[in-house]
Image (cartoon, chains in turn orange, cyan):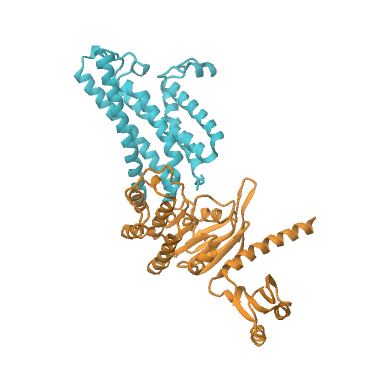
Length: 301
Length: 232
């Protein structure tokens, strides 16, 4: 089984709200994907389809070449971990670990206990009495220890404090090296998590706006920094995404990869070139889409 | 996959059986107290009759709870809707059989231990039928109540609270129709509504209809559940 994930022209509509519109992508097995989007972009809708929580309104979803919805061959191998409200959960973490291990074929109980120690999670206290951070840690433990071939974390770690999130990130990298799986990390904490991702999938207002390898930031664009006049002249024929000025210095973010000729010119003129961060790209890609839509609406009027 | 189905069925049965044993113990204790304290040794009905109504209510309520909350829990663990449905149906049958058998055994012990003249049998399920006929009827009716509870819970789960109330009303009507078909309880209001006399539809036809209601309700449950979205 390969557990490749395929979305083909997938749309999802809730009553009158279009949550997803014609989304298509392919996820290869064994990679860590960052699913990035603003609040309400459609991340959770997309992931709930992948986890067979619901069916798409139209389009095709396949895992290992078959439709995952209510498929007994696929569903035990897809774990969807999200922020759960545990206020009515009177069971203890050890019971939840035991129950999950009964239904997840690759669950590693020893690893779950190891994680509980790292997160200092008490296993014998009713879950409803745990702090929000500890409840998030429990979710993360269940997701990691399940070792499902398709593992989805949907903002499940946002209730955790910074040191706990750091432990989670370390475990993601270490356990992914030990047991490679298709892991999807949905987040808006882009700058904090970008080093975890092999690939980036970015959605905005229900549409796919980017699907790229995370390792070639210069391909996305660059910051050109130097004297204001020089920078303005250098970037006037490039697509400018952002301009920042401080005294006589300017930084301009330009879209796309700089040609070798341009890079040589920048060096000759004493201009600094720095790669665009994923955070920058996220902010400007989603802003750009909004501006595009705004202009289209104005043109329609 | 078969392994998953077994585990799920065992887990659902274990959970519900624990509650059922508690119910049985509580009803038996109450019955003994009534005989000893209130009725001074004379029983108002035998144990099976006394147990029958609370058992039906129990089956209805646990099924509402199970279908409303457990479906999501198990789908989140990678169980399919079909597996959940199968496990729940098997559990309903096992539970109904277990409760009927336990109540039957306790009633048998009661008859063996007590002077039969002290047991009022005229109210036995409101019909003059013997234990041999009463036990299968009790068994089938308990299954029916579990399925109706399940239908109500499934309606609330899929369509929300307002349509869910409609499902609850429909469920109550279904149990009334079922009871009327068995002819054991007078559903005067419904009979008047339907211009029927209580027990008007009797005999083989009514029993066949009552039995056929069970798979029919199950079919509706499947139609509601098979595409139900999980509330995340």
